[in-house]
Length: 82
Image (cartoon, rainbow, N blue to C red; front, side):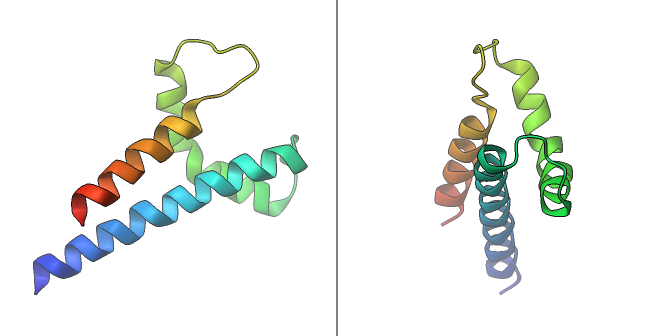
């Protein structure tokens, strides 16, 4: 019983983080400066995950591939926990 709850909770956290990362990517197209409250919230929540991945990846010019990597890893975690 407790194990099922923990797995469901971890799945929920991974999916929530995945949605927040997707939201940050979409919002970066609409509001690149990130000055709204929603943009600041998304940056504060996702930067601890995206920042280290961004530092590990080689520079991709003007493209930031860290959200893609994070989404793929989170998706793999969710599938593993299922």
